[in-house]
Amino acid sequence: MNSFLNKVAIVTGGNSGIGFATAAALAAAGARVLIVGRRQAAVDEAVAALGKHVIGLVGDVADPMTHDRVAETVRDRFGGADIYIANAGVNVIQPSEAVTQEDYDAQFAINARGVFFGVQKIVPLMREGGSIVLTSSIATRKILEGHAVYAGAKAAMEAFARSWALELKARRIRVNVVSPGPVDTPILGKLGVPDDARDGFEAHLANVIPMGRLGQADELARSILYLASDDAGFVTGANLLVDGGIALT
Image (cartoon, rainbow, N blue to C red; front, side):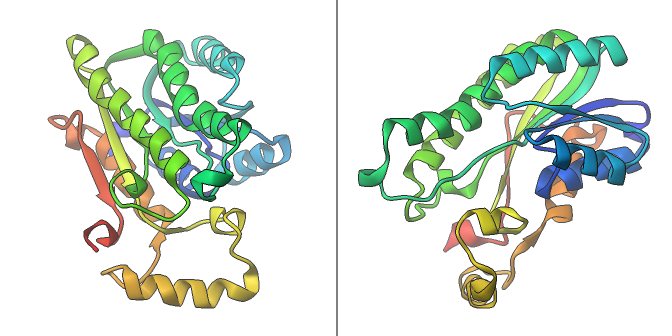
């Protein structure tokens, strides 16, 4: 995809899962990529695997200072940015009655506040005609058990995207959302699916997802790259469901 040649892209949560696959696809298409992750070892490992066109920054998107450091790094290393992928997120599955204020604040800090201020800080450095893609979830439209707080934070993100699509139109910066369904990434383990239950969990999903399987990180990456590319030059304010059809069930 020549449209990414020498473009500068930032991918939050770029050290694993969908973020890693997206950073890899951008780098392979000629972009210079900055990935942001919370753990030094994971970021270093990802940068080593992704190659010479990728650099890493360690920081928590819930911390406003992280976004200041991202902006400073982009300005100093690249002079500006073309693509911003707000992919970092967290999901803690629990019934509403069990949610503490700390639980609530932690999810909104990463999934909503972190996205808002990440975009706020990078937009002044974005070149005309740039692209912003936010990773949301089908949980905003399909009720999933124990997902109330997560869905609320992701819904806020989607509202941001619609506002930004109009706010940034004069600079021709497009803003879109991709909403994954269940994807085969390390986050499944973080959601409490143990290794010995993995086969049963995947079999259950195969019965409820119309496509009959989990999504793959590279499939999400290709969808994100489409929204970020010139091929989607007439697409803004959209929400692309990449969910195997599960939102229909």
